[in-house]
Length: 289
Figure 1 (tube, rainbow, N blue to C red):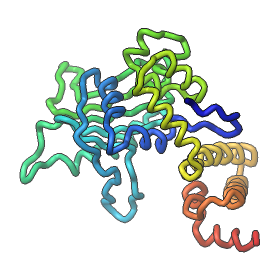
Figure 2 (figure 1 turned 60 degrees about the vertical axis):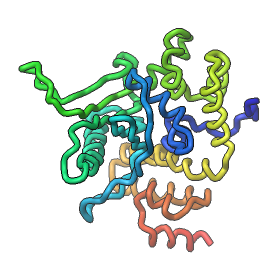
Figure 3 (figure 1 turned 90 degrees about the vertical axis):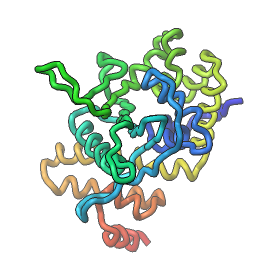
Figure 4 (figure 1 turned 120 degrees about the vertical axis):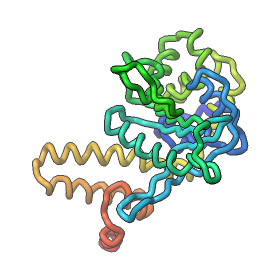
């Protein structure tokens, strides 16, 4: 039975990486992850284990980075990222992190691993509907029509386009890609209807798990700053455009910090969102007492 409470709060779906990882990054059950990866790669994928996702810091200027999902499959190592932007900056960032990951996993004992296939999969929520469902990029010499014989691929999945299969009621195609269609649906009532139409126990269990996560106050507390960070960026842009000077951005930052303090966010989370120091935020806390 589905949760049918009156919706007075946002619903966090798969485009939030915390939700995605909680469902598909379950180390006790690879069933859903294998289904999703098999649809992305158009072949059966058998997951062996998940790899720790925190990247090594190579110098003191680097920020700590945690990837969304790292997977060891049969003959493959796969990095899966949830992306809500689609531009060259996103690609450059993804490739940098991907090759940092590759550089720490390309040796076996005292020799290089030339057998394993390394894949980056971008599950992208910002691609144009006119873009392909799936784009696969490899090292390729266009002038001589020759591919470099290394097993590295960058794969972009147009998640919104798969979601459109549901909204257009393209039943046949979406049943062939039921997991990719699923993660392209953003509304709770649409997910419930999707479960009824596809009639899949796997999909039903996934949707119930997402609903349970949305009812878990501690879980929602920790992912809510994602939404606040989006508001922060929008506010910065608005204030900078309106004021045309640095004071506008500084005021916006302080106002956002005040709002987050009022909502009882942790100091570390406010630092991440606003860029303020711990000392500055503690001073604001003291003034509010």
